[in-house]
Length: 109
Image (cartoon, rainbow, N blue to C red; front, side, top):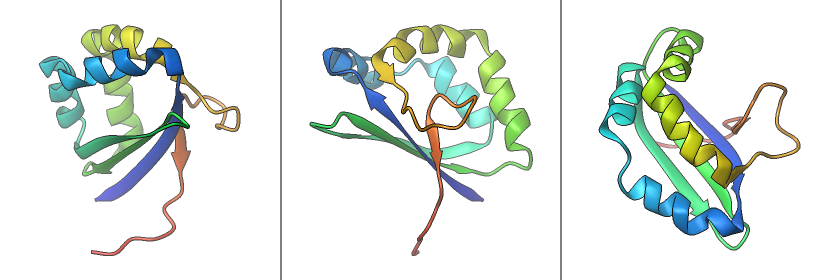
């Protein structure tokens, strides 16, 4: 299992919409996430900075392939068409990233 964290900004004017969307995530989106070996997926919000921190545990053997399956899913793409305009990617993110991936520097069970 691999723990993964990521961060992105949230546009202030989209805060309520983003919360509303995530109060009832589409079941097909959740199923696709699960089929791609992602468990314990959580998104936290830090206000007033409006930073989103995402965390999940990856239980598969090929994250690139599982992530590609998510990105190719038509329902997920429709979901992202609603959520992406709410987000503000960090200027310091790596090339090709939307959410900026983070390095794990500490863990305790």
